[in-house]
Amino acid sequence: MQSCDFAAFGQMLQAIMAMYGRDLSPALVALYWQGLQAYDLAAVREALNRHVNNPDTGQFMPKIADIHKMLQGSTQDAALTAWSKVDRTMREKGPYPSIVFDDPLIHRVLSEMGGWVQLSTKHEENWPFVRNEFVNRYRGYRMRSEVPDYPPVLIGIAEMTNQQLGFKVAPPLLVGSAAMAQRVMQLGTHKPLIGFTQLHPKELQIACHQEAA
Image 1 (spheres, one colour):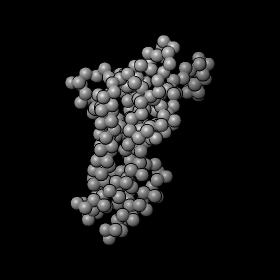
Image 2: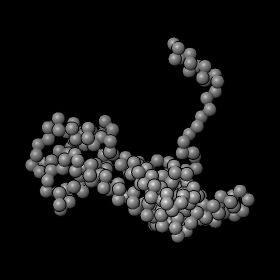
Image 3: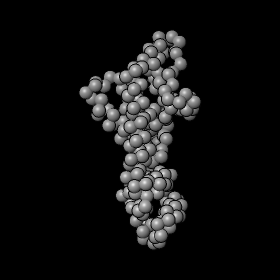
Image 4: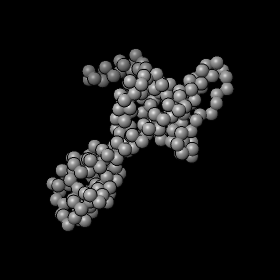
């Protein structure tokens, strides 16, 4: 959360605590803020709602640890669901077709891990480690409610080869909801995930002079 979210966070927390007949002091709001600031406001709101509606724990006022548990659980579930799509698609379709998932974070995470073809080179004994890397990366984005830039299509071996030879490229395979996968493809970008800019020697000299001044 950002500093601009503090007021909305306090109001949300006050409303939740009022359900349990508890007053919320400024010091307690600050304590909750410090413990949960790493998360997105929408994610915290969702976690609080899940706690309140939980039949096992909902009768107790949520502590910071309770909210952490809800946040961790929700992101873990989402990451494992995403990985199951990746795992099944690779096992059933292989690395040859180009793929579009119905989840943009899958595209981002797999791109950071080398791409669809690179994923196929991992041996079975290394698969649990690949899964763990995917889950950890995916959860990081979900905790921040962040959807960064991602490629519209995960390129497969067939498209990669056909492009090099100048042959016609087949449409990608849509995985999951076709409508959502098409939207993922439309909103993706072909620009590099990391930008590189070559600094001109004159710009370097100017920067050095400014530092010296």
